[in-house]
Image (cartoon, rainbow, N blue to C red; front, top):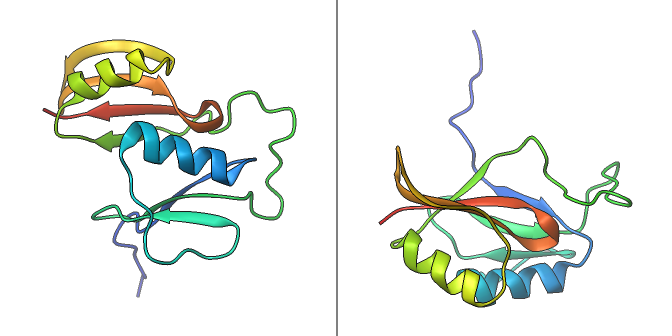
Length: 123
């Protein structure tokens, strides 16, 4: 018998400064903290999959890494990608690719906490 997985169940970004990354997510993405988080992490009340920023796990080294997460594609669903783009751009958040229509609606890519590349889509 083969054991299988159902799919992603939790997503966390490893960051150097948990509070600064959490503030970015709250201020620019409108995320709200979950009632409880483990030590060294901030978990947000996201559905259907919990999302967090956290201290690096043992063995993960971010020293000298200008953009963590290379090779990982993290997409965030939103009601209105164009409006989120406009708000992020107005706040000075670096936009890496402009809004365009894609397979999942309007989409664009921006630089998130500590330089993670994030794509927002929807609306």
